[in-house]
Length: 354
Image 1 (cartoon, rainbow, N blue to C red):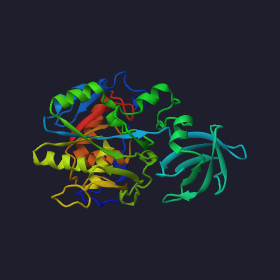
Image 2: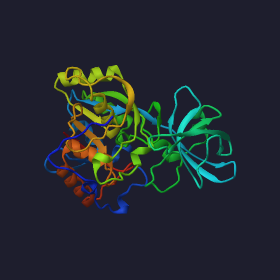
Image 3: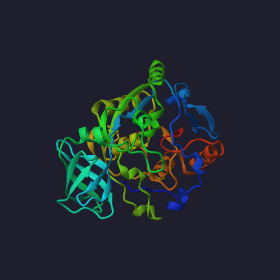
Image 4: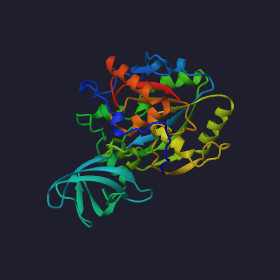
């Protein structure tokens, strides 16, 4: 559910536009995960760093919260019974069934009852349409969806990455700690962490906890209205374990900071706080969220955010502006472009605070 925001200024979509040289859109990851650049944007002046410096930038007693979702090979290529080509992007696997929700691209939309053939290996039946605008197809696979996707699917690289997925993408478009399959896009801020960096963070007394938010294809959908109050966010499933909620409360009570690794983690944590009492801070459990965080939104849980650089006019750019301030984010993005930082999923990161 979305929460209305209040702000002294009314923002429109145009406020979140900026010019990005196309060559700054990263097409491949850095050769070493923690070797990416890190823009330290916590103070009045940005500082250029390397991601492996992160342990020195946090404090003993801080709590890093990661999204442990695992990217599935959600993109499928196939044909309709008529022979026409189609492409499907699985949005969600329905638990305990052989059914999925998927975006399907074809010259003509398949009708309920139609059979689709994927990878010349297995069939799916169209059960109907779903989603707020009927834009998602409800399909039944002839076997376990996770198994079939793993065998015949492709890494669902974002639309701005122009090469076909390869073996390197299978490894690098995935965090080193991914454990809960279900995402169709990576929690990209966490791609910069490797085992050595995680060990150094632990040695410095920086603890960690996990949530799960299965990132949906809607994360790449553009905002189509200049009036932000008219935008309807896509829905994503998330889970905040009781142990994570307790670790957050204990950290806050001890004077530590909650450091969100990525916007997906932040969305899960702030969604869990929407109806919590001040004493409990956030509610553990799992549910769907369509939270829309724009400047003026009062964040209750997250103090510090590690995040990549986001698309112009995107809801994620609005989210980071809500956390760190609109003008501050504009200045950081100008600096990042001037200093030739790499943008988007395979790009560099920045560190900002509330």
